[in-house]
Amino acid sequence: MTTIAVAETPLVLGLLRLADTALVHAQRLSEWCGHAPMLEEDLALANLALDLIGQARALYAYAAEAEGAGRTEDDLAYRRDAPQFRNVLIAELPRGDFAFTILRAFLLAAHAQPFWRAASQSNDATLAAIAAKAEKEAAYHLRHSGEWVIRLGDGTEESGRRMREALATLWPYTGELFEADAADRALVEAGILPAPEDLRPVWDATVDRVFGEACLTRPPETWMQSGGRSGRHTEHLGHMLAVMQHLQRAYPGATW
Amino acid sequence: MVNVLERERVLRAAREAAARVVDPEIPALSIADLGVLRAVRLGDDGVVEIDITPTYSGCPAMRLIACEVEAAVEAAGLGRPRVNLVLAPAWTTDWITPAGREALRRSGIAPPAPGGGRRALFGADEVVACPHCGAADTEKLSEFGSTACKALWRCRACGEPFDYFKCH
Image (cartoon, rainbow over all chains, first blue to last red; front, top):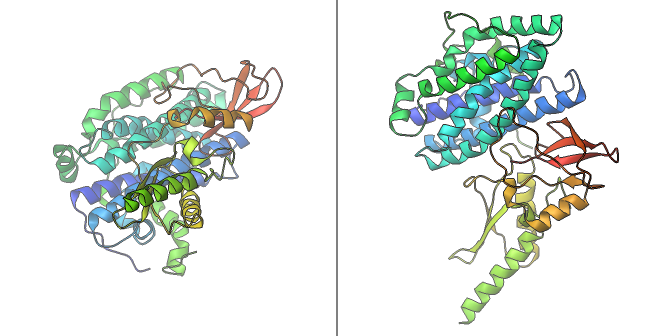
């Protein structure tokens, strides 16, 4: 596979982190297409994925423009390998069962909605425009996934057990949502992106409220996984990309 | 003077041609009534410029709409236009015109509640009138429907399922 080397200025890196998280999560969600527990949910998960792919496209297109090396959104999505992906690790974990999928969607949407709302006030006009649209989509995702977390957590013995197991697995991956390195700091100082720690109280409140209704106990403070935003990934991402990027790897530059 | 009049004629013809393009997913609705057609201009070089905006980030119809706008303007004898995809300000269902809302209803799709935008996490569901019989006794079957912009509802009065254009 011929990979590309992207010049990661803080803005390009920030955009890639957002775009990669959206795309990788969308790819996991779309794995349910044709396999969801019922038709309505099959449509729902595909719709969530479609929104995220739409957001990823806009972010990749802007990252390519900001890099100024003449690349396209497709180059960024299909011609980088796992160590070049900047998504948070939680997005790449295998889809698991439906409880796992829906809880992950909830934890991410509870972060995305306040993130995009704040980013819609960005000094960067392009990012603000992408954010204004993404915020409304994230609100819908949050509502849908949150209702399922409650229904399953406070459902049958088995659905509650599966939800608790999913929570135990996913929780150590939530810390990465609030990390900030030098690139993040530069973007915050420039008024381009919201400060990660400022989103924490809203996320905590949403999670606590839904967990309260779902009879789920928030796990105790624990060591948090990290690395995805710097390209250190779980073994799962490489396998996922092998499928997602198959066509461009087998037939470089293929179009139709 | 002639030049000014000619420019006005071209601009008017371009507006009319672009406004006739329909949403491929909802053929009853023109892109003008949907609020997707944002601006029609004439560039200094005499080329028609058209701005369109997506309803949802992932709307798969945008590329087709752009192609059809190009084709419509060209077919009107106005040359090949420049079609721009603009993201700001973000599209909202409030931009659907009264004629567009009526066209939705006639094609069996309940139009979105006005004053859309941010919804509470678990706010009360809006009251949606059945587009077939007008009854308010309806229920939501699924938050997600046949396209990204629609949800699936059912009327308890007449028993018919229907699409609801989501408030956005």
